[in-house]
Image (cartoon, rainbow, N blue to C red; front, side):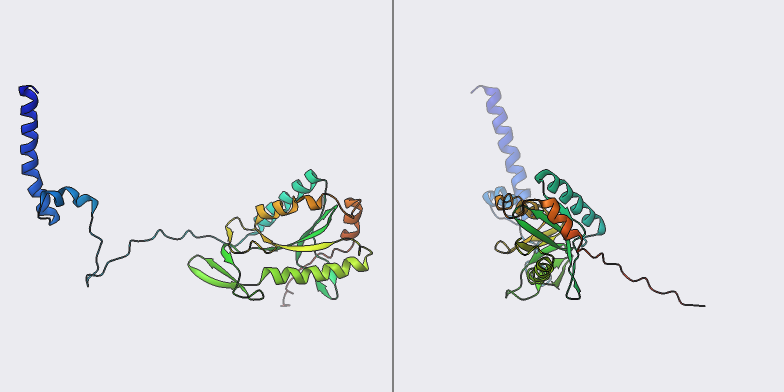
Length: 243
């Protein structure tokens, strides 16, 4: 090592000797080792009573339940899907039976049978209740809510559709109703064994091979029969008060 390199090393050593005591004093440490390691061991924030303060969590993103535009989007998605698969889409899928109107948004007619789509517009984190028939739970915008059980609701719709189809001479065609959450902001957990899906899950379910063949020889003909059963719900307009 030449004289110049030795001089540089000596100067650096002197600088460290001058700086480290100041760093140690500022961080409240007593040794050079503690001073060097201080940045790796930052003190946690403490409150007025000396208790540790939890770091601030990122604010929860505000989301909204499904809007009309998302229903339109899911219908458009179904039109594209059924055309590609050579299935038939019956929309709207509301059918009157025993004085009740089904809540199915649409019916998908496949060679393997008819699938009704019972749609829910809830967003946020969604998971089942403790018992199979309990209301489900929704967490959205820092709030915990109870929502209707989509599985039991869809089972009731399936019973109504089965009755209506039997009366229409479609008793030999299988029918089922699945629950679909239409909001892109819906996050479903703990529902793997149940017929309950988000939008992508709905398409994946309908793509199953078991729907590619079955008792329905002509999905269009069956779709026409189902369309004849459809009743469009019309909300009553409030009557204007006479002046």
